[in-house]
Amino acid sequence: IAGITQAPTSQILAAGRRMTLRCTQDMRHNAMYWYRQDLGLGLRLIHYSNTAGTTGKGEVPDGYSVSRANTDDFPLTLASAVPSQTSVYFCASSVSGTSANEQFFGPGTRLTVL
Amino acid sequence: GQNIDQPTEMTATEGAIVQINCTYQTSGFNGLFWYQQHAGEAPTFLSYNVLDGLEEKGRFSSFLSRSKGYSYLLLKELQMKDSASYLCAVRDSNYQLIWGAGTKLIIKP
Image: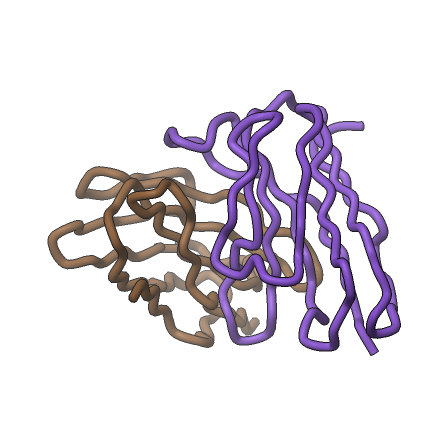
């Protein structure tokens, strides 16, 4: 693989269910991010990780959790999905979280919560 | 609060030039990014400005004025494939990106 992959591509989920969105990068980037994108709004940061073993909260972290056990993987978990979490979710990575590096984005996961 | 403003939608003609403006108010400034996003796809990096002035990259140029909290993206010799949304993002004092809602650019033949 090259770049960032996300799985699944799309998912329809019943409210109250638990769901994990997967994200893997093979660029050995230190920093990784999870965003949600909703119509009419800019990308909003959910959680981030500047290096393996550390995570931080973004602008809209409630209802989501992340882990960063290694450099490559950064899964996002919805513990109990609600309809307001219907969105397109993008994972991104960058060489560093604190320098002038652009972020590279995965293809996104389209999630619908009913 | 932090705010990034850009026009919602713009229309331009193939072969012409278009300028997409972005104004920002953020807590701190550590650079401004422009990304392109085609419908249904991921954003892709276009340009980065951290000092005042113009950065040129082929048909695309980006300008920054930090004192005015203002940037623009200039697209020349427009092609149909340039139809996309253009996202402005500012890196704040915490090195997090604050994103505008994006400008949808429609190119007409």
